[in-house]
Length: 87
Image (cartoon, rainbow, N blue to C red):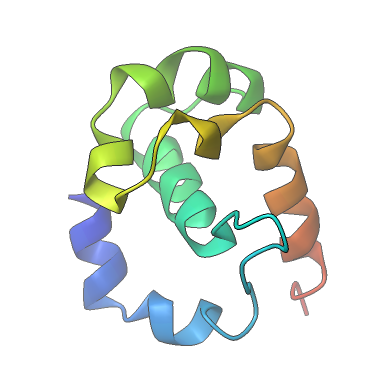
């Protein structure tokens, strides 16, 4: 449902140019989608996101990503990237 609303609002169009993939291939756009869905479905800490929720959910499959998307530093890095666009 979270990804359905994301697509309905066309948030990919807004964020794609603002969150390019990292040099190592991390899709920050997919990381943001996962974090948004996490907050909508089962809110909790970023620590819990990478330790429990992501690996137990089907989010990786829905995004076409493996478990490396939820490595412990990536949610924090994604949130840092969002700060550049808060205004």
